[in-house]
Image 1 (cartoon, rainbow, N blue to C red):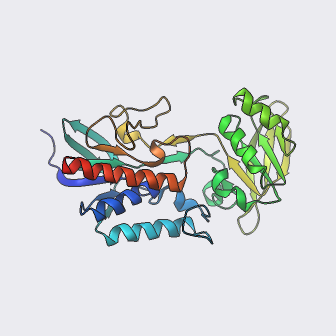
Image 2: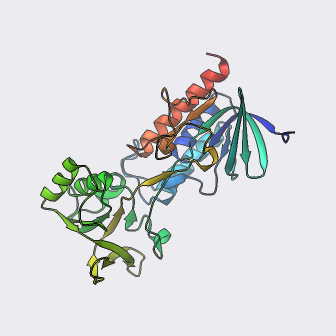
Image 3: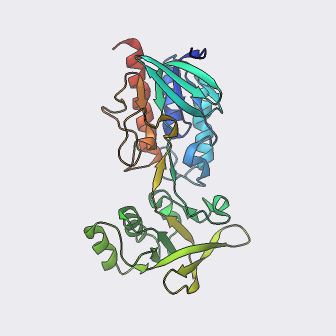
Length: 311
């Protein structure tokens, strides 16, 4: 016998830009959504010190403040919040059952906006440095580092794109890769190697971050994997471009994904299963921006509302 479950109209998994935008729209539609915030409320924006590319904030806004504003806006219209984390999903026809920590919930519509987590290097003081000279998004943070040296860690297309983008701002871009050639596509690798402002550092890994007394990045320690030689490289920011992991553990084997685990959508925000909608970085492996996440959260909530009204 299945455990008893509390019934909800709409459950939203995730409280980043996608989840909170979905919450605002669903709440304004009088659906009283329950938002499962998980263990890191706010998603990646909660660790971003300044957001300058979200429309409506010409002077920029702190990431946590933007999240707090969206949270209050959703709450104002009737969204409810829980710090519980989604851990399992059961689908039986049109019945959707979600486990949130130790409690089972049943819902008529489910919006999955659980985001993706950037991969970092696992070095000491890493969490404290995120947003203080350590980031995973050149598009988000590159403009803060004008006329100073920076580095990109990685060797794939993402790393190549980040490095090329950063040449618009930085005085020098070091591209640090543990191998002796890039894994990026030939066209991207050729562009990187032809750019005077980019200096590849081959066969090398970052072993230590070196912040100043205020906790801002000033340099990194490098080690050549072939010669074991170590050196210090002064940089104002480290851009880590070694990939993201979509937060889909609770839905593994239940919903369609691409080979890298990103959830698949059919039309705008619909999944293959009726009543399940998907928004934000958990499905977006291309843009990964706050504004695109917010847009997909809006679409997911509108589609969920249509689904519930039988349209």
